[in-house]
Length: 103
Image (cartoon, rainbow, N blue to C red; front, side, top):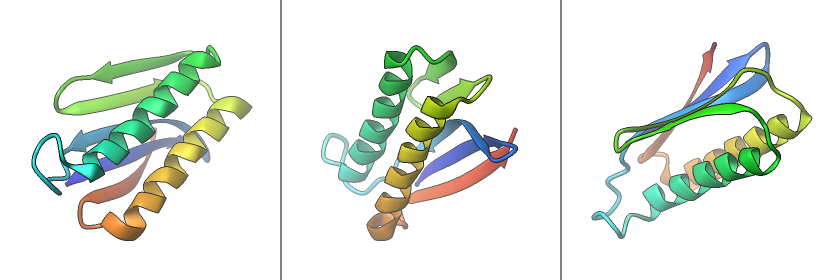
């Protein structure tokens, strides 16, 4: 299962952490992993495009994006990420879990 955790501070989104694998299908054919991957990398690349300051970590086990401060653009980007994950949950909730953590 993929665990997605949105990092929140006083109702502002400050990033996310992703761990695990969906195991929906074999490596290279797993559409659930691919969907989470494209949502997360689109968020990262969009934050970078708008020159929003954030810390980024990614290895084979975990991806983490962490902002020190939110602004209007980062809120929109991370809100879109959250909406994408929630949309994925409508059909694949046995493969993806969404959590919220106050930081």
